[in-house]
Length: 162
Image (cartoon, rainbow, N blue to C red; front, top):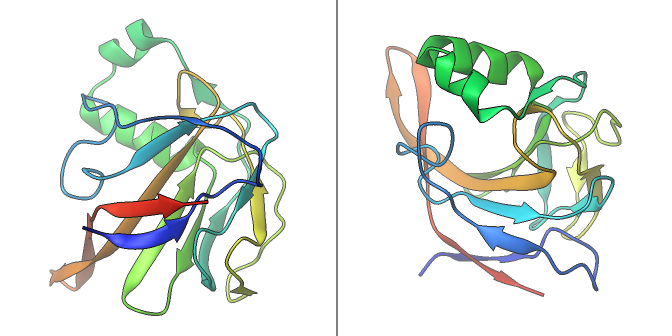
């Protein structure tokens, strides 16, 4: 089984979970074990494990939720749109693993290099990128190997506890 992580929400929040697979999400080695937590917009997002903030993007209020529109886009267009318009935070857990918290709103409350404790607030649920409803896309990854001088990551399964 995978590493243990805390649920990334305050106590009392009861998310609906899922791991949809398809053209838009959770496909390929980088996203295979990602989990979606459906919760109301504005719900605080907490660090599931401690570590150091590795990356923050918080500047987009743009999203596409129209599946018919997404169906008309090429893979390259989908990837470019997601990279430009998805807000997220990545935490380096200090053991060779990273946790990605995706589809946040624009409030930046953490900065790269900042030390984070488990269950510390790192953001809020929003609508950004390619998403059909407010949710947190949580993904734990580890470095797979370097390709042409670039890091390559793969997701791995995790266990959540309250």
